[in-house]
Length: 339
Image (cartoon, rainbow, N blue to C red; front, side):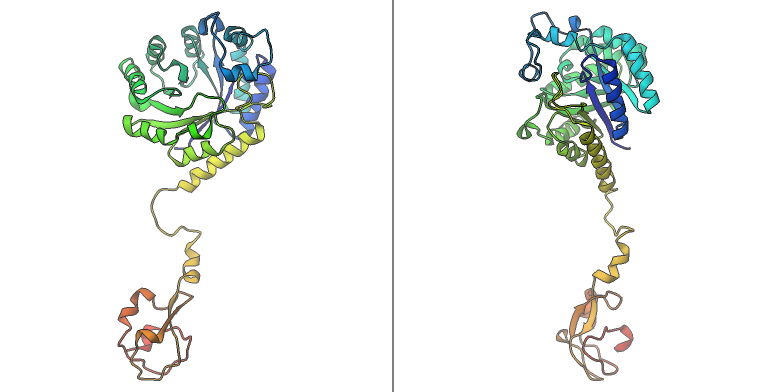
């Protein structure tokens, strides 16, 4: 099954539908499978006094936005906006998805029949939220930034006890720092999650660049999620740690190449290289001029290309045999030359 590539538009539309539509175009042109937004009512997501994260402070320039609430209020998508974006996704031939951040938003996403649910890292310890997601019984992707194995296990138990079988859940390893320092990526944790819980795994990437997402595919990720933007220098909390259009396109191309390169795990000559076996390997040749009746010794042989004669692996079967007629140095020995 092909790796699902989720192009995370998130809130990089900055509250503007036309920008959101342009992001959809970029994701589709890059070859992503899904473009994902965020659905929330700011008042139900954060309290009035909730402080902004360091990266949010650094990446937003409006001094009036001194709380998360003020910042997020500008980034909400209306219900009508959702319908507009869904319709635009259909035109662009890409799957629409959105992450809900409060219970009412989850109900709305179920109402508009999104194909599956994506649980963001911040909700992994939110019992009512997890139970609500589970009640829908749909395929679910769980991000695990900031979590340990125990918290992942708790979340999985809640989901499975309340309506979602384990085979419908994919768990994404993630680090919730924007951008994530390379030394904090810990990609091997994705494999640890897979071994611990027997689930499908993937990676939600917040590093700069594309190499870590590509490496995750090589390590077994079935889903890759990556933020993208029209312009990294735009004002907003997530632009800096996002890919620009050409980078997103290159990431998709690279992931598809890695998928092909992984193969089926059976070690045998490939179709493309089989023609080179005779050219690259060697066969038994004579190292010197030898007379008829000569009894062959190991010193009489030299291994040279091409490999359309006697294999060097059969050398020991030649020692002590008799040459029927004289042959010159460099001659490729055949079984018919000896008795």
